[in-house]
Amino acid sequence: MNYVIIDVREPDEFASGHVKGALNIPPSKLMNGAKKLKDVPKDAPIIVYCRTGSRSNTSAHILQGLGYTNITNGINKEQVEARFLR
Image (cartoon, rainbow, N blue to C red):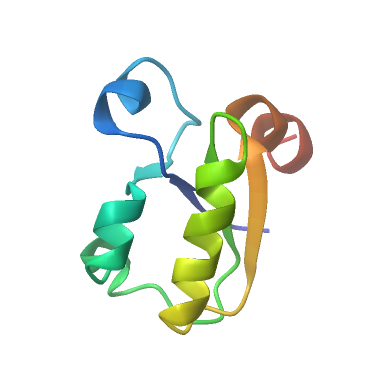
């Protein structure tokens, strides 16, 4: 399955290592409308992750508020790679 993977950490954290192909959209950018996702269908499978799962949980709720319906909290980079990118 093809996922849209969103790393919701800050740009400096993203630069230190991230899931290959992940978009970097911190929660503050999501709250401003997530312009990077304008072409993503509202029902596309989206995985959000951060370092501990806290920001990704918050971000999942923000995305739901924007109308996205198929969101998974992947917790962190390692778990996303192990669970979804085999």
